[in-house]
Length: 422
Ligand SMILES: [Zn+2]
Image 1 (cartoon, rainbow, N blue to C red):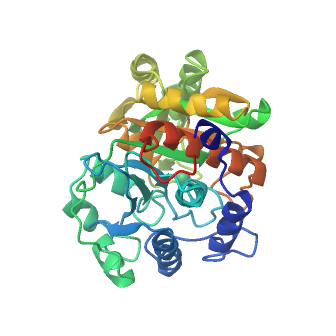
Image 2: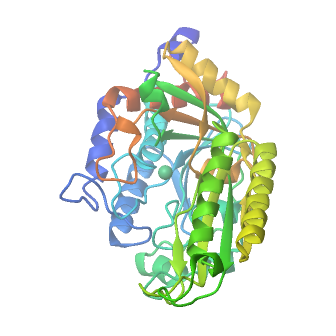
């Protein structure tokens, strides 16, 4: 059995076919996928996924937020299943791999176990989490966040898209408002395979990223109030120019992230001048700051540095600068035992690997707050995702799925009374 276990591989061609077959649901002319959550194309892929899971012998359940759970029984049904999977929705200009690889690889793991006649000790649950992307309904990763208790189901069901359609209505329209209470499906742990969506693995020619941390995120809303006055008649020393002050704030935010780097990034993505006019000195403006780090202490120090810079600039320029934190999500520390299991699987399979931090948020990051969780990354071309150019090789996708398979074997265990051939 040891040999059968260590030699076991997923069916690379079958996984690759599945990735390309499901990419036809919402295919874009440029080779990407547009499959907004709970839309008609999402229904198509969900129906496909349900059928494929049932054909692989799983029972598929759906919860009140549309998350799909496909259960493959284990020998010991008193144990909660090991969860594996990701999401099947995409950005409006999405690719074929973000989320899809992790979901279809999880299905492929079940099929590979079936083909090898292996019964696991613990049951396995293949998951498709609703609305990971957040492009149609906010927040992103809403189903896993509700699962983790960050939002109530009612709150999420009432969220609206840009046309005023609620999550509840969208679920009903495609027939995916399930009967299960959110959180009813328990897990022993959760492992998510995903493309890296960053450049590190490719740059270092590594096949597997063993994700041990996820970045935390803090969002700030800023306002600067100076004094709007005539662009021609107000002498420079008398101006209280909100935009000039903002320029210093922007550079201070950039400097703070650089000073605390490489484990810190900060971005000002939005700025709005109130009542802009080419011949008026800007009086009031608002802006946003997005700060990320995988280290809570660095988070705190960035927070202090940004607030101190705002206060100093305000005093020197005689304007008011208010920078208010509106959201903070602590960094994710993935479960050491699960992370080690991923690392052992990568080593056993002979794949090059490195430890890595997830720069993006994932469902596994939400789940990590309520269960042991881990992630596996594989490279994507030029680190590009959320773009129709998103690309990954068959060899890397296969490697990731094989690492997932062997992580599952080690965590779920092979039933000693199992139907193995040995
Ligand atoms: Zn994703």
